[in-house]
Image (spheres, rainbow, N blue to C red):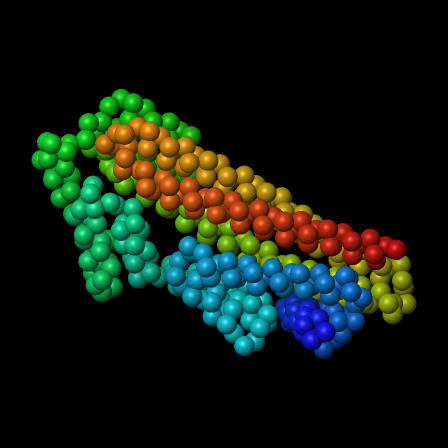
Length: 370
C-alpha cells in the first residue's frame, strides 16, 4: 500500500509540474491560470486520463535527459544534464533545462567555445589516429590534451598539420612497411565517396581522391581519414537528434497543459459545444505533435540501422581481406557498428514512446467527444 501511495503521489507531482510549466510559459489560453489551478486539473482527472498523459510525458522527459547524460555527446552537455537530474527541484528543473534558453541551450553554447572545440578536436584525433600509422600525430595530440588551452589551440592551428607531415615522411622512408595502394583500394574509396550513408565519410573519401591526390592520400584515408569521418558522422547525428528531441519535449509539455486545461474548462463552460470543440482541438494538437515525432523517429531508426549494417559489412571485409591497408579500419569499424546499433535501439525505444503518446492523445480526444 505504501509503495502504491508513493507512486500515485509521484504521478500527481509529475502531472502538476508539467502543467505548471506550460502555464508559466504563457501557453495560449492558460495565461490567466495559476499553477495551483493546473495542479487541481491534473490531479482531479480520473485514472488513465489527463493526469496520466502528463505523467507519461514527464517520465519520458526525465528518461530523455538521462540518456543525454549517459551519451557520447560533448562533456558540457552531459555534465549539464546530470546537474538537472540531480536538482532538488525535480521535474520542474528538467522542464526548465529542456526549455528554449534553458540548461541544454546554455551547454550547447559552451560547446561552441573555442577551448571546448579545441579539446574535442584533440580527443577525436587521439581516438581516430592509431599510433601504428600516425605516431607523430597521436603523440602530439596526447601532449596537447595533457597541456594547457594554449597548447591545444597551437595543435589545432599548426601542430596537427606539422605532425602529419612528419608521419608521411617516416612512412615514405620505411620501404619495408610502405603501403601499396592498388586500384581496388581506390575503387572502394570511390564507392564511399559516392554512396556512403555518412556525409563526413563521403567528404573524407572525396578528399582522398581529389585532383592531384597520390597514393599516400588514399593510404591515409584508410589509416585515419575514414575513422575520422565516421566519428564526425556519429557526433553530428547525436547532436542533431538531441536538439530535435529537446524541442519536442518542451512543445509536448505546453500542448498537454493546454489540453488538460481545455478539458477541465469543459466541465463548467456555459457554451458546452464550443468548449468541447476547443478541448478536441487541444488534444488533436497533442496527437499531431506525437504523430510527427513518431514518424521522424522511425526514420531515424532506419537511418541508424543502415549505418550499423554498413559498418558491420566493413568490419567483416577488413577481417577477411587480411590486407595491410584494410586492417587499419578493422577496429574503428567494429566500434562504429556498435555505436550505430545502440543508436538504432534508442531510436526504436523513443519511437515507441511517441506512439504511446499518440495513442493516449487520441484516447483523450475520443473521451472529450463522448
